[in-house]
Amino acid sequence: MNPIVQEIFKYVLAAIFILLGFAFLGMYLGASEIEAQPKGMLVGSLFLLVAGILILPFISERISGGAAKAMLVVGVLASAYLAYAVYDSVTSEMTYLETQEQYNARTIQRLVDIREAEEAYNDKYGHYTNNFDELKTFVLEPTVALPYRSGTFHDSLLTDGEPEEYYRRGLVITRGEVDSVASVLGMAPAKLEKLISEDKVGYKIVDTTYVSFFENQWANEIRTRKKLPPISLDSLVYTPGGYKFLIDTSSTEIGGVRVPTIEVKDPHPYGRDHAYLKKDTLMFGSLIEAHTDGNWRE
Image (cartoon, rainbow, N blue to C red; front, top):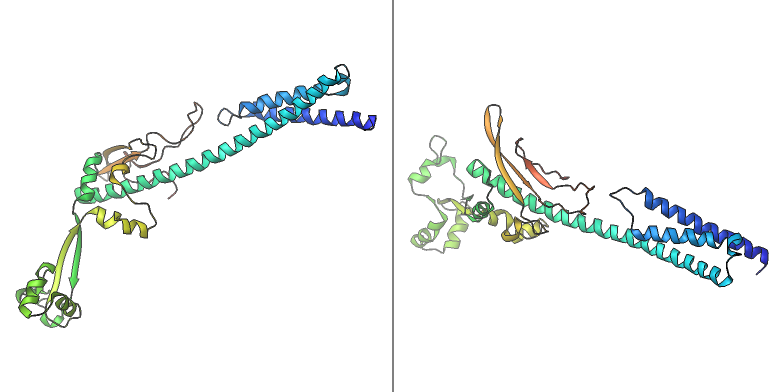
């Protein structure tokens, strides 16, 4: 190689090492406490600075050839190490953010499900419960009424606008009475139900059956149709991290009337354990305001 070109190459290489060293050292020192860079960035930047200075021609001339080459190798290795440290930092951050997003999504879904059950509990009893065992018992009890009607009440038999005549004549039956009535009429129960639905007989079916909140809202086929994960009552009250949700109830006065309030939150939000980092606590409701809004985007 031409001696002049070789000298220029040394200056250029030294300048690259020094500039990169200062750049990454500045990034490391300028990072906030929360967004601290990996220690590898500090080590790599210092190696680059030292190697860049030592291979400057006016300094390397005073160092033996073997030592200069060693400094060059150190600089290259430091560059490679620094590149790896930066890559590892970026990929680790991406993995962390992806994991955090998945964790929060599962936490929010469980909070939504708990809120749905608590609102149903409040509709029935006039207050919320701060006992998860009571809530579990409630969602399994047959408390949801499902009215059932088959057949039309024709005006020709009505008295004062009400279908009292049908009841007086014994034409209104429940679903449990279909079999016995069909037997008296000498036909299959299925056929009688079909005739009733088509208004081809005088009988009408008026009935109310009761199912549990779980069957009505959380059955697997319903959750699948809504593209939601199945519900396990044993794990519902726990965060994805295994911590039990904190639940508290109270009441507040609105317009001179006491109304119930509830607050449910994740006791251990997902995030880095850092003294300078404030984690976002996922929660819904309020003890001083009558609402069950979540603090996430809904």
